[in-house]
Image (cartoon, rainbow, N blue to C red; front, side):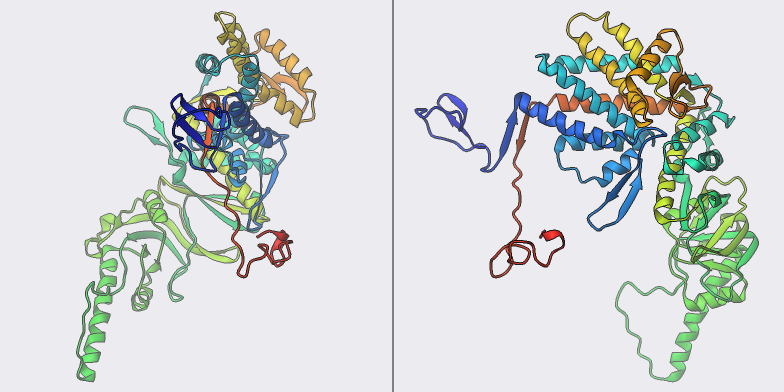
Length: 571
């Protein structure tokens, strides 16, 4: 759309009177598109609602999975909200904001992505109804802000403090997070592994609080066997094999050296030439090279190491010398693996082999190369008080393993959330209904139109209960009526039991979620909805690129107008 300036001010070309005087001035690039007012708001809200609707059926233990096929034909089967939105090629700028909601939720708490997007979509849907009643978006945003603050206060009030040194609630929360995944059949077993893994890497801070990092739990995947064969290794699993066939494949009471240096004769940084005039000089040169490599191996031996893990290369001659001394060596280990090995074994990563000493070595009860699936892998296990451990995921298919990894990541994040903020709430939409009831009473105390916004915020929170009921094939109206009545009578933890189709006390069903997850859902959904509602003008300068013409002219894709020679008839 073109904008012109005249004596009368800024005018839209399409509405400017023909007699308008003055010299026209181009403001927007030709081909630009502009949408304003309610049309822009409705467009943005509709796009966001479509995104929320697309993952709505994935919520809860009875939620359905999505099959996502990318442009290369790779298939992903999942019910994880973040993964679904990542794999969808979303173009609309407002819809992308909901993708950001899922990313933020996943980054902050690791769970609750689907709930956050559903609530954000519902907030926009209800706001659209208010806009149609001529309530200004600013009033709605102010009402939403007050409602979010009140909802967060309610969550803090009803949350149950827990003792993280007892794993009962950690296990229940981790199991709940896996209940809606493909791997739900093994949720108790996998949740137990996740809790044990996180408990191993928990660190107590000087102020008495606890901290846990999900990155300290390494996750390795190998197709084969079943999910029941997934194991927790009390140390680090390296997807590497021992470099020399003459080295022992098993070392007990391993003393491990971690080298961030190569066991090779390094080439000089500048060009150098050596003039050799006799065979004796060649022999002396080779012997000197051999002596330098032997010297490196002797330094490793002098430090007392019987296992060497090197981030860089190991020369063939050095491998031979190490094998003769009975030292196990692994080369080209990843930097991230080296850092995890240092945490697990207590070793220090040494950058200069001349500085290697016995104090830099780490300990593991066993270092062994084993065949796992089709590959050989090296197990470094039996570490004393390791601050980094490994989960080895097994499964029948690659897609099952990928979904198991996503599920275990969610469970690890849930445990981390509880370690850093040891408070829980029951699941099954119980906290959402409690917040909704509080907000409806709170709305009555507000003057003016803000109370309408607070009321629709409460109704948006109830969408979690109706979605759970719909996905389980239950009557959402009946379930919602029962839930409201239960919470009105003081049953704080009344929620939807999707397996029995009844409203029950979810705390007695051991369905728990971290308080941190619920708080982040409210924050993310409110901020995304408010940002989209604030927009009343969309100016797009992007022009659609036309496909390039093939040599010699004609239609793109084969000259016959049907995309000949290209799959699907597309260029």
